[in-house]
Length: 190
Image 1 (cartoon, one colour):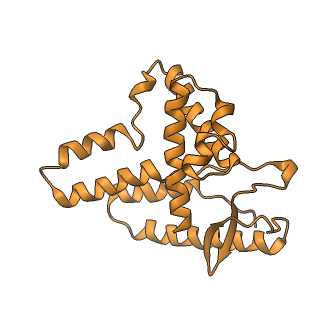
Image 2: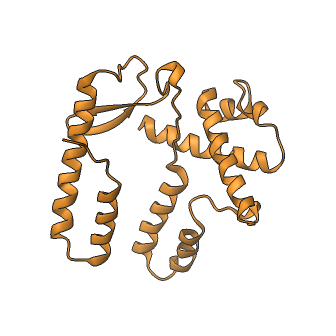
């Protein structure tokens, strides 16, 4: 639950930062500890800087594509148009699309690591009971071989599950999606 709240606050900070950058505000002033991103969204300065980095990247991409940066729709323009079209016609599908749009709009978390500080100070990966979790534990030793073994076992299990689902799937669209997900999984040399 805390991770979802952090993702919601980070996404809101990214949208806020994007709009402030559009207005020409200074990035350094926005990310200060007493600046608006840290105080309004209860983020530390590293998350605030990462939110501004993502916002700046989006702004730069819009300008390079010669698109109007003021017309950005966070969560996806196509999905928002689908919502407008579906509202009156198919309520169950509308509710699913709305949940998907909210997830895409609020489900962003970006945390960079720093080699000089021993990795990412905000987010660490932990494997518990065969599942991979993000955990804010700066004490965790990423050089520990058991950590790498746990991550490897998690991915190998996930890949085996995806392969089984891929072979059993009859819907060509879902089969293609599973194939893409399989292609994106890391490969481990044995």
